[in-house]
Length: 288
Length: 169
Image (cartoon, rainbow over all chains, first blue to last red; front, side, top):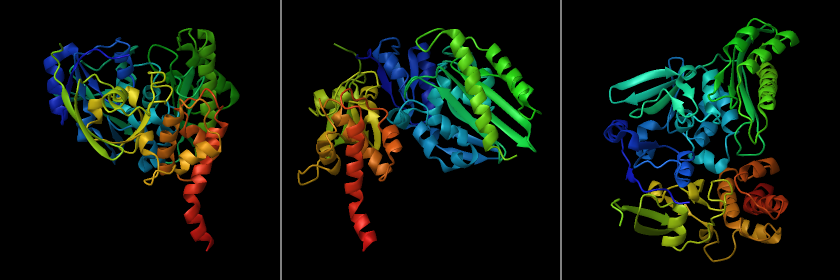
């Protein structure tokens, strides 16, 4: 399992990296943590002629908060997300989700930017970013543009990212203190992609939901933002009937493949169960 | 034959500085085993699942089958070859695997001990659950893990002992 030949580039700035992508077009691929791309290269399912290693760009590291939003730069690893005090305090759902990704070795190298930019429907971060209403900063030859995570995914491995652009940062509106949160993932073993998974964020006042968002992982070609399910739950007391309706609305938008993780009907049902469990845990955690 | 430019890579492996020119597509595991004759890290699955190729790179446990040698340029690496105490005696982890029968066929052992070494640096007093999650990226097909967990607990106890004694005094 030896990858095909390629020319190795290690730029030290984003501008330099973008210039390399511009000059080589489709023949170049950016490399972040490498734990999706390198396995594909070893199988020769990917054979970029130019590999642009983003590991030497200091500007692509770090987590900061400014003006009501948390910015996570693209090369921040899952291990760094888990260790971040800022995230543990303000956005604990990121730590919970990161701990369910792959295994410790992979989390030392796997990055948030790579996880969300690759467009693999099995990845956990895309649905979480949709749940959090994050936006992605895409840097190209003409500067930066921002695309909402909810608009970024087109089909499996197809996204709004242009070949000459690099996803350089993820911006997440800081959720209100006291919010409830949970990511529930059903998987066959440690390191597996989800059979189905659900992210839930909500706020409550006096037992009533004042805001709620739900997103689902690996039950369609793209991550799924379950807008209708969130709308149904908003304003409710999470009574059984309303939860049932919201779960049905979320299940209705799924379109999973039948594969080693189970038949499509099962995975749809599991998406509903994951959502229900995430809702219950998020409600428990929210300060009423 | 190839037109691809070879790249100089400098690494510190188990305290020894080495420099080689490599093809960019050379994986770190092949570089260690074939160029440097560091054959402790094993090639198991080659698909980043089994952890037999685990090495420590700049304080992180990584699967060296899924890293290019060029990405590791400038890194400090520790492999199973660098695990023993400076006087050549077994480290607490190595002794733990011996005392607790933490290996049978031994194929996963270099990766397992190297991973546990980093785990104990980050978390010197892990619970059983933390040990099990901490070695979740290393597969063993012989032991059923029970004795590996005991071996790591043995090492943690040994490593924490001087402090415990101090506290008792």
